[in-house]
Length: 264
Ligand code: NDP
Image 1 (tube, rainbow, N blue to C red):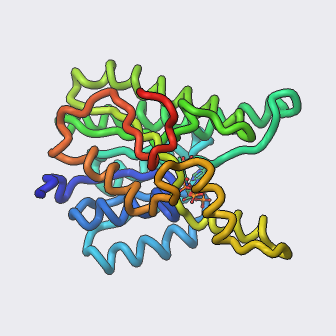
Image 2: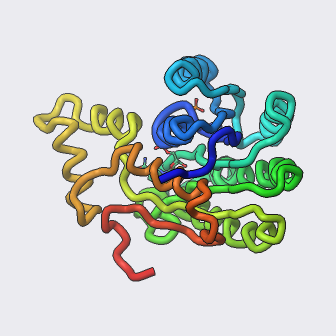
């Protein structure tokens, strides 16, 4: 299938590892040039070098914290200077939490609000005008199944990802007249290095292996009884960015191995 996105420019926040990196690989394989943003500059540059070498695409790295307005301004300026703008924006940077509502301080709510919601608002405000100059574009927000079906231990994650989903819908209505398609993705369990690390830490010094732990999580949550690979997750993003998905507007797509327990 020709996805029709060769030589487009995609900005991916959190594009240095895990799902964001798998999306970078998926898009680069289609000939898309990349702007990757994350805090750790060294990891970012290592992966960028590999992507350039493997796919022959241009890759700009911009290290920064997307929960900070100034760093997003810098990301937008750097993209403009290197590529003149962008056609695709993937708001992917994010992380889980662990707290109770009774105990979490305001600062923690603010930190996750800035990372999961304000980052997407600010990148959209900055990149959408550049997309309009190019005749249109695509924005994808990586929320989570937790936006609709909460996990008990991370209320701040659940609430801020739910807000991101509503933002996706509102932004879509505003931008589709400008030929910018905005959609969201709600993933279930995706086996990133972070999950492997958590499994290792939680099983260290016990008689369970990290694999035992991960299998228990999968058995408990996903009807398919396994995690998705980052590549399986990335394939949906790449499709939604493509010319094969031009009627996909204002929706949130689930990819969760049966984890969602209601009909939506
Ligand atoms: P990882 O922790 O593997 O990767 C996160 C990426 O985001 C890294 O590149 C990280 O780089 C970057 N990042 C984190 N915080 C910031 C920040 N403040 N500013 C800039 N970059 C940042 O996460 P996953 O790949 O697992 O998750 C990616 C997205 O998918 C997240 O939004 C997550 O909520 C969502 N998701 C994940 C699921 C899963 O099972 N893995 C399931 C459902 C949704 P650095 O640390 O260098 O900044």
